[in-house]
Length: 141
Image (cartoon, rainbow, N blue to C red; front, top):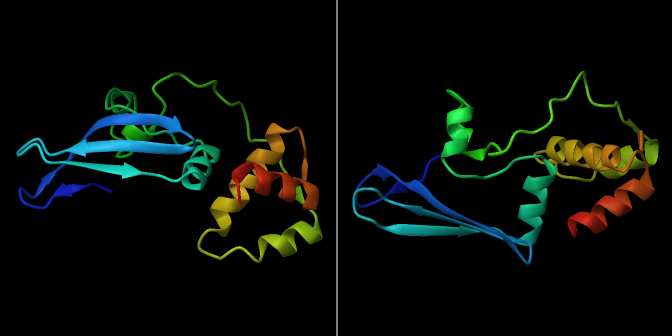
């Protein structure tokens, strides 16, 4: 996804990323042609959702690390530990799967990944209703 300056039809450049303040993240883009600026402000839920998936929005120098990846500016600027092998598998109880089915289908895979990561970070190999309640409280839903 790119932001384009409407008057110049030029891709806007990332200028600043404000750290989450009260859960909100601010990102400022500007047009290199005319200097027009625009800002994007996420609400705390959006910020937590993106962070739970491991996505980071950062300065352009992160894109140099990413090579030809079109999402290079979204990679962390610091080295992360290399994971060896697949992440610990997480089982779902029938009750938890039933609750997962209530999440709209277009967000369900992303929600499932985030919930499984949440469970692993807490040392749980199973997603049950208790984990779902804790995740819901953690993500502010």
